[in-house]
Image (cartoon, rainbow, N blue to C red; front, side, top):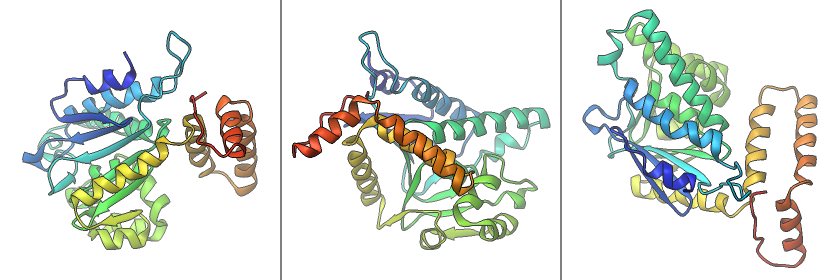
Amino acid sequence: MALAERIAALACETLDLEVSEEILTVTISRPEVLNALSPVVIAELRRVFGPLRSELGRADETGRPDWSIRGVILTGAGEKSFVAGADISVMRGMSPAEADAYTAEAQELTSWLETLPVPVVAAVNGFALGGGCEIAMSCDYIFAAETASFGQPEVGLGLIPGFGGCVRLQQLVGVAAARELIFTGRRIDAAEALRLGLVLRVLPDQAALLTAVRESLRLVARQSAVAVAAAKRTVRAAQALPTDQGLELERSAFTACFGTEDMAEGTAAFVEKRRPAFTGR
């Protein structure tokens, strides 16, 4: 059974899973609490993204790599909220040791999203606050509806961002803007998030949002899976490097592409003026 079929068949209490046109849509579905992140939600997201990270692109018993999922949409159920944050009603009773285990699992999940070999796009409808903003920031890019809002309000609870907000927010919007947003806990709308560079595109409503994300990932699915995976690894790794070291890393990754079947097929198809038939090898 292909990985896509196994993932789509997972029984989840807080997630809706759908695979269509090689795109997996993961919808966090706790509308009664604005899709807040509870330990159960984190555990179920880990059940989905753990196998994706370790098995996508791996050869099956026939020797063919499994690229049955070429992109992931992460969104929230309903129009009010993507994820309104961590579930405070659960967190308030945690001991420091329990909080450490909770944030460790959440941080590892965000790292899995970053290192998945296919793009993950956050489709943000409504609130993306606290842990919701942090989950969105660990995706490759964010598309938002005009009604979306973002923020890291943890200081108002006597806390700080714990799922990567202190790290990723400054990478996306700059150090000063990240400090101001974290220190004040203020909420920003989609227009300001776009201006700051937190959001890539803003769409008029939820339907247009999901259509735009699917169109983006359909374009990805037409490309070489091994090339997209290599590009994602290289862009992420180069973020933390000085320019000269980043260029060296890029050269190494570029050169490695010349040993793939997809490079041979892609260049041949270009010369022959036809659409390439990539195999993901």
